[in-house]
Image (cartoon, rainbow, N blue to C red; front, side, top):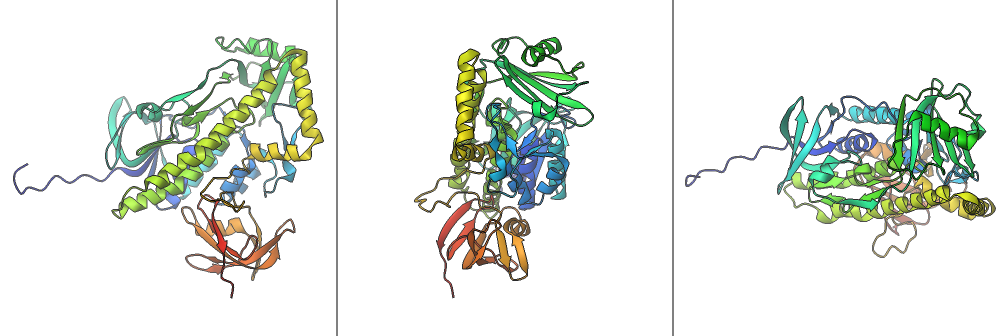
Length: 495
């Protein structure tokens, strides 16, 4: 460069955050970022949405998250509710109807429909999905990431301040960043098929656990069903892909009939491997959803775990982008907090799924006795049933913090019924008003009552445009993070 010459200007990145993968996790993350004023772009290798649904269950905590942004009711109206759910395909169900939430049920809904609704939510906040772009590599720089993408047979580069891989178990972003992904290999396999049943079982027989194994169906529109088995006679043949005839034989072996099964439209072979990324963040590259963790779809937790990852990550990325816009340093501790909080949650889900698979796969008289003893435990001890329901639903997640003596620190705040001057309202209605990426502070005063009659308190909500009233507990100030978890509880000054 000649003396006195100015260095060439560095062009602005194509996006502030590039999200790779337009499944439910990627769409939710991008929608939260767009709503918080961040320029987030989504690219997707598929030309269209996946017709084959992998996830069918939306759990209560996920519904709470969606409700705090005004999305849940659209999903609930389109799905089917179940007030109970299984643990390890057992006949003794977990009772979700007693859970402390406005959504005391699991919602049965094809993932394709969930994905469609979340993409509509993204578009409503100014975002979009560019399809047909496949990530093939990346390079990290001091202030951005360059991602090589293949499109229409050619390659070009997109740049962003941050890149988030939401691109599934075989994540190209995770591999390009050199992040390890390890765990236990497959030791058993199970089929999952989309079929038409000419003579389907009644609803009470949608799940059957017998000595020969487990039969499980999920009803879909137009007479179609997702059929799956865990067949003790064939489950260890992990090197053999399941075929239609193998599935038919398995269903007959377990139930005594094939329920008039017609040729499956699609059949997949599912393995029980459980893997987790060695880290969820490498400088400016982060992972969420199946790119960070995979497990057998027992209990329907995978998609829910991923959406909850995205909800935790979005506000952190929004803060990081705002800091860099203003010329400040990267808030390393804030971004590292994503892995510190979400990786242990992922580890626990993988552990729970392994425990369920061990119960389901235990064969013979010993396996039958083990399942019988566990189901007696769930049926005879309501507190144990509630504990497992809280874990499976995601409602009991608590993020640790320094000196977290108050048991409410780190927990998700429930949708309290508030006694406001203008009438009753729910807390999540206020969270919708404040929007994504914003902390909310509640200053608590006189006693009131929530929907269950428990003592709470009236409060002034200190927002950007208005003073509202809400509360939770004694006279204090409660700070709620943008993801709905409690960040701070301290004594309030009451006039």
